[in-house]
Each structure stands twice: as structure tokens, then as C-alpha cells.
Image (tube, rainbow, N blue to C red; front, top):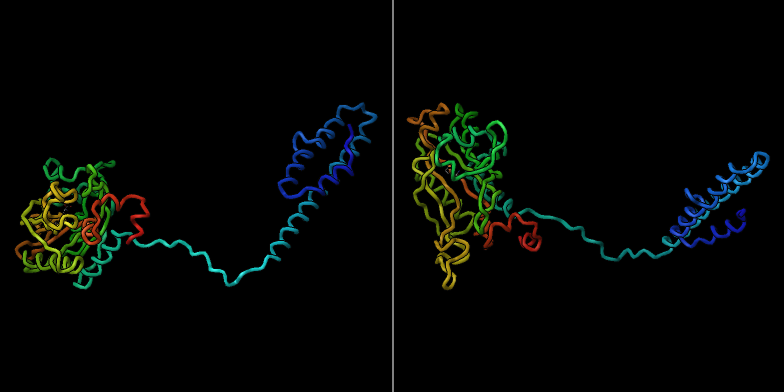
Amino acid sequence: MALDEAQLKARIEGAADEAALEALRVELLGRKGSVTEQLKAVGELPPAERATAGSAANQLRLAVQAALEARGIALRQAQFTQELSTPLDLTAPGTQPALGHRHPASLVLDELIELYWQMGYQVAEGPEVETEWYNFEALNIPADHPARDMQDTFYLEEAHLPRTHTSGIQIRHLELHKDELPVRIIAPGKVYRNEDEDARHSWTFHQIEGLVVDEGISLADLKGTLEAMMRGILGDQTKLRLRSNYFPYTEPSVEMDATCVVCGGTGKLGEKDCHLCGGSGWLELGGAGMIHPQVLRNIGIDPMVYSGFAFGFGPERIAAIKYGVDDVREFWRPNFAFLEQF
Ligand code: PHE
């Protein structure tokens, strides 16, 4: 059945919008469209009729194509005119773009960096993928030493691992600067451990490492520095406690605790043990100590002349105390209701 060109054109001109026009295009010119079929049918005709029928079918195709194009332009123009005539309210309030802000752990890190900067420290950095040498051996932790158990992690190829602490930066920095003593640095960064997650532990967290090497540095300098830092970041009301501890790369070693934010240091919530501090009333903030003479000797620094201290803290723990957060895992969850409070 031959198609009627005038009728087809009328249908095209009547297409109400671009979707209707597209549907028509498919119906007429698509792979199985009626105009397409008519063109294909020409090949089946007896040779004598092919030339006339062929040129008629081709002409119809061109006419339909032109009509589709013209209607498309007309539809878009109409829409544009309508948009132009819609009054623009210049006084309407703008749409506020959603702005992010710094993560609470970054806020605490920035504050710590600022505090130490005021005390004359420089910021140092180290790689997140560390060698076993810098992460353990150079810190007096040989392969079979039980201290490795405390910082279990996963290993990458060829004696590399995601660093379990920022202490390797102590060694890296001293190697580079042993002829330019004294050094005073802090080194913030992310660390990774194989931890069973609970309110106080997550398997990724931040640390901030401190290192001072000079002549005549004593434990009193370490204590005074830590106290200045804690007063600066948590305020005078927070109680601090130093207790002895063990790290293979410091001697003596200490652990620093601050009073628990949830139970206020009592260790109890009603009858139960406090879920954040586990009933002790204290939150462990990090370790510290006087640099072990063997560590200095390994680097080529004479421990009879120089001494120093080092410390490592978790900013998430400090953020938990500062902002009253009772579960450090929140810091690593994509929970905007939580994060937007800071
Ligand atoms: N690296 C220790 C830890 O991650 C903390 C520490 C740092 C201890 C510096 C002593 C000196 O637990």
C-alpha cells in the first residue's frame, strides 16, 4: 500500500512534543519503519517498474526527513520562547551548594600541629607503605620479637607493609638530619593494624608522632611537653596520667591516659562497666618514652652526647575525648548525621 505524503506530513506537523516526534521518526524511518519498508520493497519489483517506484520512494523519504527536522526545530523554538517569557525572579533566594568541612580527626590534627608549631616543631612525613626495616627492625623490633604481636597487620610483597605506626618516621628523619641536630618534629599520618574493632579500636586510624633529639633532654622535658599539649587541646580540667610501659625503642617508656569522657573517670555507668574505657576510668591516648640508646647508635648518633624523647598519639582518641564521642568507629563511617556536628 503506497504511503500518502501529505497525510504523513500532517501527522509530523501535529507531533505535540519531541518525544512524540521521535516515536514518529522510528515508526517511519526506523529499521522496520513504513517508509523504510517501502524503499526495501522496490528491489522486489519487476525491473521495468523499479526506476519510477525507486525515485518515488526516495523522494518520500527525503520529504519525511525534512518534515521531521522542521517540526523538531519548531518544537525547540516554541519551548525556548516559552522559557524566555517566564519572568525571572532576581530576588528569589539562591540554592545553597552543599559545602563539606574538615573531618574531626583532621581538626584535632590541625590543632596539634599548630600547638607544636608554636613550640618550635617542624612537620615531617613518611610513606604509608613502609619497609619492615623502618617499621620494626630499626626500632629494635626484630622479626621474632613479641612486640610485633601488638601491631599485627597484613603484609605486601618484598618486606613491605602498610605502616602500623608513625614511629618509622623517627628513623627516616634522624638518618637525614643526624648531622644537623637538634631536631624537633611531629609527623601526622594514617596507620593500619589488624584490630578487632570496638568502641576504642578501628583498623585504620591516625597517629601523630613526636621526636626531639638534643643534648641534655630528659623525661621531665617529655612530661612537660605532653602536659602543655594536653592542656592546649583538652583544657585544664582533663586529668592526665603517665604510667610505665614498654616499647623496644624507648627506655624508659610511658603510656599517657586522660580521664574517660563517658563515665567521667569513675569507670561505671550505673551498675555496668563503662563501655568506652572498659571500666578503668581512663582512656589510653598513646605511648612515649626516652629514645633507646641503641636506636641512636644504629643511626650513628652518640647516646653519650645526645638524648631525646618520642611520642605517638591517636587523634581520633583525642577527638573522642574533646568532643564527647563514645565510639571511635564513628569517625570512619560515612554517617553525615554524625560528621556534620563538628
Ligand atoms: N609507636 C607506638 C604505638 O603505636 C607509640 C610510641 C611512639 C611509643 C613513640 C613510644 C615512642 O603504640
